[in-house]
Length: 181
Image 1 (cartoon, helix red, strand yellow):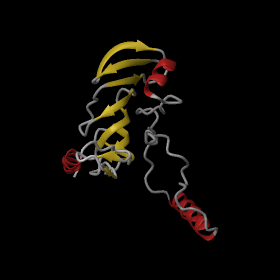
Image 2 (cartoon, rainbow, N blue to C red):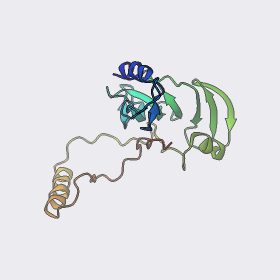
Image 3 (cartoon, one colour):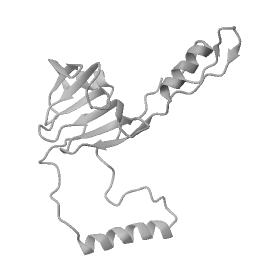
Image 4 (tube, helix red, strand yellow):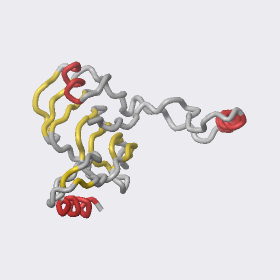
């Protein structure tokens, strides 16, 4: 559908993806066609790595996001394709988030201060730590925990509160917010 959008856009003349009116080849004003929608979420890989950011319509990584590497504890911030290969500039934060490195197409270049790295990738604070030491150990089914969770959602339903708030609190690996242009 994206290729169809590009072909249609080319036939209509200069089309803005943000909904602005543009001129066709004949010079008349046409409403702009919307680009493909951007979805935001998390994508987990079999080895334990996690991508949080923009997803394609197929649920695969595609766009700006953060990749958390479970083995090393490092995280990469930048633009990724569906195979999680970084395209363009990016930043790599160390395991303890006390250092950072400049990346170009996934290749590590030079060291950066954390403040400079945050400024470069447009974040307010460093990404949450995620490595084997931060993951909780699996405990299996616990009847008491199940009853408490069930009671939480029953209470919210009876009080007519939103059911979207989790009993476990806020997710520490939230997807990146949409870019504002």
